[in-house]
Amino acid sequence: MQILNLACHGTIYQDLSENPSFFNHSPNAMFRHDPVHLIQSEEQTLLSHLIGKQAKVNSFHHQAVKEPGSGLRVCAVSPDGVIEAIEDESHPFLLGVQWHPECMYLSSRKMSRIFSSFLEAC
Image (tube, rainbow, N blue to C red; front, side, top):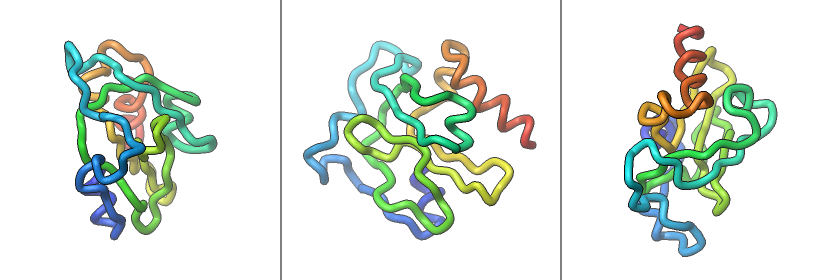
């Protein structure tokens, strides 16, 4: 997600510790598929269509989008305000997510819908 954002001329937090109001987005979890916090999706987005209003996600990162790049829309945030997903509606399927759905698709129907929707778009 960060590379996508930078390619579209957005900015990132190099380290979330730059903002003391952000919680630890890289907590110790027993397994990589363990959800550790909620995200809230924005209405009328591709992501909200796929996962609904909210989802529990895994998390192991220290960087995040600061300002979305050109054409990108914020489509999910965590409770502390960290941008958790971005998308560009001008493309058939352009979605960047902060968490790792590839670790959760077997245990979460919402995460598996991200992949099945991507394959349908292809």
